Length: 302
Image 1 (cartoon, rainbow, N blue to C red):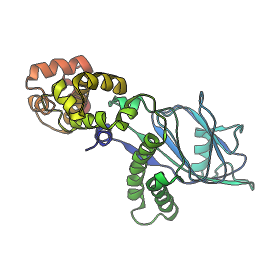
Image 2 (tube, helix red, strand yellow; image 1 turned 45 degrees about the horizontal axis):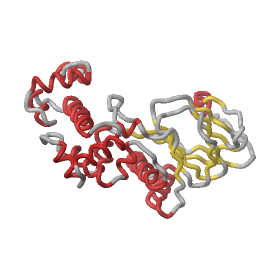
Image 3 (cartoon, one colour; image 1 turned 180 degrees about the vertical axis):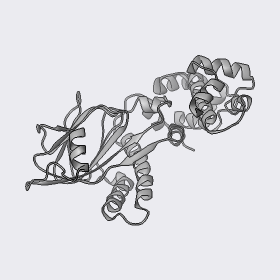
Image 4 (cartoon, rainbow, N blue to C red; image 1 turned 30 degrees about the vertical axis):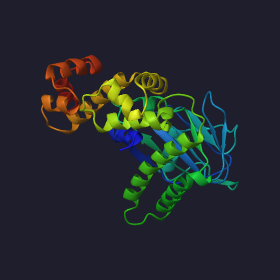
């Protein structure tokens, strides 16, 4: 399993899609700060995205924007339109009296949000940019474009099984957005750049696949095809922490996952993430999480 897939599997990505929205100018919605990652795709008309501290983005038809950290943002038909709060828009929409239903230019939007398990703290999530803007009409984004088109069709027709299909398509859409961003953007630092580096990505893949292995720095450097010195320097530069620190944090993340999803005893959990001593595992887990593995499991399952 590649490094990104391993992270997303542990992050328990959850996705939700919204109904397709049709507006006529002037229109504008103000989204408050949210713990979820919103996305929007312009299907027809004109649309601008405004995120505080970022450049105003004008979307072309087919473009997708993602706000990974759920930042407050304004989405509107013009760059200076006054926006109504999302709560006000949502209340009107669900009452059957949607706003922005005039006779001017029509804009059609498709959207939804992504959500990660709150307990997952991973460099990938932390280093995502404030805004991701993807032009899906570019040839390299063919798969992304096709996934978005399929979503639009399922939303429009509501055939048998559409809800299930849409859920899977939104999951795929998130991965394709990240893939397209990595391929298109001039990433200067952070975990996304580590994913782009074949050598470090291979090393991350090895850690993710075998957290139980008694890894040494030399062995990890071999997985990257680098000398130990170069490996340690490049890993720290790209990932933001040392290889052994990352490995420890990954093991704790996997341990939390196992504790929440299985009834295996603590010693078995410890062994699965690379610790033969249950006592040592307990001490490390408590130092990282603030409570023992047993206490963590009781709290999660209560």
